[in-house]
Image (cartoon, one colour):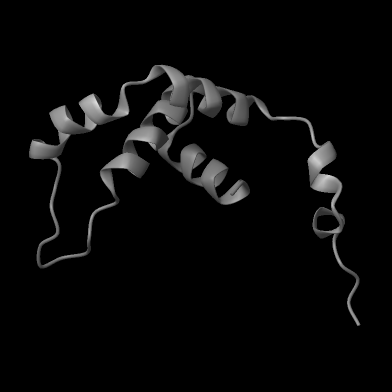
Amino acid sequence: MPQAPLATAGFERYSKPTRRAAFVAVMDRVVPWRELYAVIDPGYPKRGKSRAPVGLERMLSICFLQRQFNLSGSGAEEALHDSL
């Protein structure tokens, strides 16, 4: 029987918020998301015959995080895979 990781044992409530989590919390409070989406959506790629594009909400928040933490495209991808 494999041992359960500490994260599933209830210790996650004792974790310290990361800089990324703090930034996302502030960003959610101060960015007018709906207005931004309304401006960008008409020019954003829509689903066609090829692969579906990444959702506008997700892509916009990734761009903000990438800019804030000075990440390259591959650095942003790695950061996304690194955390939930």
